[in-house]
Length: 593
Image (tube, rainbow, N blue to C red; front, side):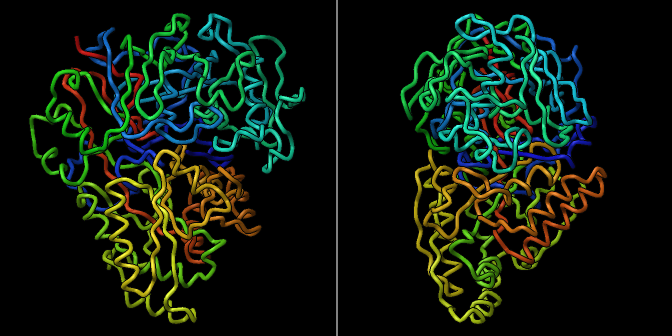
């Protein structure tokens, strides 16, 4: 779900301030959409900023630093709405799947929790966070001793090379693409078709079993952050089953998948060949992980409030309290110790499909008519959602400067008359919009609100519900038959360089450019900003481009930003929020015996 380029490279050596967050920015959204800005009735102290700094080789040694009061053993249960669409690292780009992947996959680098709200980028399978040379064009990693697959075989540099090479294969359509692009070219699948026909990438070298060298075409001083993404988890060459790997991955992490009933449950047990002394990131405190799917947020919330029997040792990755229970949960002081509250770190949008909605005045009219306040009320009020006005999230963007192009601050309920005026200028004052939405109870309600508002402006809305498990797979098809749909994107670290070049980057099936906005002028401008070595100037330029894109192209409506409130059972310890994924961090979870 995130990314950057050279402009953010300067950040690699600095501390990064990010907002603590906790649910989705994707199809895994707890009840609806997310974004940022505006009032919140939740205590300000809840939103403790997190910091991410660059760790050393010593920081990269295991075991992980335990949370306060940690206990080992027992069975923990994770309860959520949907099963995971993908478990092949190459196909993982949604935060919920990345969270699950922490239990079974390891990468070259990752984020070590050093204290609550404090993290360091460290070597995971690698001895450190990598060594750049040639001005950042070359990156060298050395694997740790004793890192093994679930069958006890050694993880080697050949596995790392194979992992990246297989991401070029045609069957991989949904994961991150940055390392691939840096090694070859932007349209990387034309440059190389993967390793299955025996061809290798010369840009990845493995001089011995422990060393892997990446040679990029241009400098990328932030590459070690890119390798920390769940999508770059390592896959063993000897166990690669291509498409089938998505359902039966081979573990390098602390747990093995013992059983999986699709859309119903998982059970994970310990991987006997995982060595905590090699892992600075994962605590792996429970003996067994059970996962239960098919529960709506209302059911999950009520179970946690009741805190009965097995639910005392249960938690959720992303099920946020629904609007009808929010006030009860926030006002009940008995729940204070089991309550996690946090705004989303993501940018969240209702994308226009520019291949279908070609008249900018129609897109502008929809922006003016947008019922932001009504959607906020449907989601539970200011305690459940904020109303941002910019593409970039104010909480995770260095150099953020607000603007309000469509009057959302002064008329959050929408400006119907202005919308009608713009539609009249198009020659078609009554257009039809096909709106696709994630079929959840809350989004059903939000859809009614959107439909009512747009129809007041004269726009007919045809609502198309989509399966929640494969929602992103549907809207990310370039030939989809929808005009408007919600999507979320979170930066890998606080810079527009990790947002704009992705959501307005290459248009491809499974890609992240949901609006299909792709012009040579915009591409050139983003490249220029990305390569600016002056990080302050680059950040200012991203913010200026934010406004320019909405003025010149209007490819989206900025969505409301969810503020998640989640509960957990009374016998669950170490429940914290991952500042980048907006899900509960599995690495610190333990069962109170």
